[in-house]
Length: 393
Image (tube, rainbow, N blue to C red):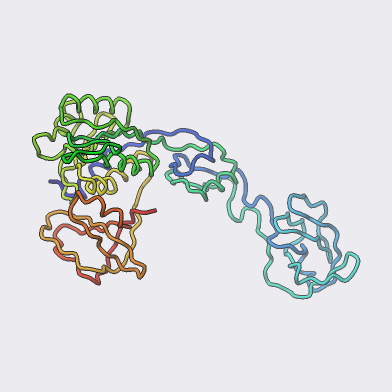
């Protein structure tokens, strides 16, 4: 049984970025940028008025001023501001040459004709200077960034309408077990509906991976070998749920290695999820996950998710929230790191939800986060400040 940190390091060191592709910037939300984006111009591209008012020289601010021009946004000024002159200007418009401040409209008194007087002086210039935010050729979004809605506006501003992003990993998913039936089937007493495949597809799709489901493989070596081989032929990563433990029908590690998967580790000091298997198949990757639903979920969050992100060039660090534990957590066995489903209460406390074992998938329905307890820790007392990983968006 390999320590969690060692298994994680081995797995992440095995991951390689799958390549890049160019897509339309408006389709890029959620994708991982694979090239730096640089600005094609200064931003702002001109000295820009930040207020509706009058562009003038600060040296003349106490004098009567003559309005020589009106400058709306989207208009190029025609005249230079000279002594005791000003231009009426709108927010976002180009500040004319010669002016070095904007007198706000509400502080100006019109005195007839084309004359104004500034009734109240302001120390602010209200000019957003050319290149103050970004200079031409500055990097505005760095490679490895996960593109969010706010990045789309930046891409548009610098004219990057076609953006290079990482290729999304193709993930083939297989579920094993003679007792497993599809969700639409009314199961017999000894059967269980297939939840793992759809949970896995949802978790992988949520981070941008492309998924393909290869159905349920009965506990038969020939069937399992055929499904895994086909999944490898069509995907970058193959994930099999179930069949990785020590039972008579747990064929997954054996079959994976038979077809050429190089085992990197099998059995990790984590609960739930101890039987986890990871290996490489040339430039492709294989995960064998335990069949219990909570085990599959926890291992996907802790291992599969950061691994898939790394194949896209994204350095994933899960969000952690802190709070005060609302009830004691006591463990009889402490030889593994262990994860518990918890709920974030309105008063900021963190409350463990009812959780029987790794097959108790309904516990995740009430959970907002998972709480990790390290190997060797027997008890975490109520009132302790703990850190949890959210599992809800």
